[in-house]
Image (cartoon, rainbow, N blue to C red):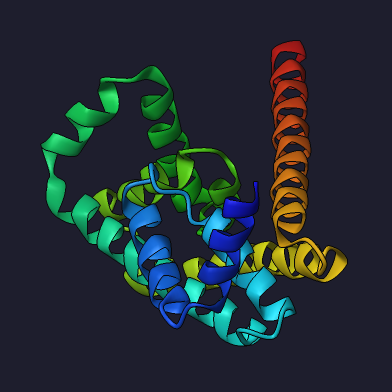
Length: 205
């Protein structure tokens, strides 16, 4: 446990933290196997400890994510039939592709802001935006708005944990990650309830 605390302290004070944060946010947008939330929370804790600037932490995470999502958008735009074949390999991906495609052209890019809170859905949404030739200018506007809200919230969770557990940074990290998981679970559960209710109303009608 002491080794973990020591390593966390080194990571928070590292001059490389912001560069790693940028890379994690960019990669996460294209390959969601590398979740960036943990890095943002750690950087937020580093800000609470005085090692980083909170506004800079949020800005760096946002920049990495916007670049990564833009890459994903253009991958979708240039993929052609290959993307459709990949989507069809998994029923959940196919349903999400159809849902995002319809929403982009009916309700606009608001879906790009909300879908990022559904596990694994952001990459599919950005690929879909590119594949359906959704306006890149609009895509950037909604993506920027989405990452601003998302990373401000996650960085503040880290800052809160770092400030509340200044005497034990490992507990602060555990607290922030747990709080993020609980909030995510509440949001996802609420979303599913709303979807089921809407489906029930449509069926009843």
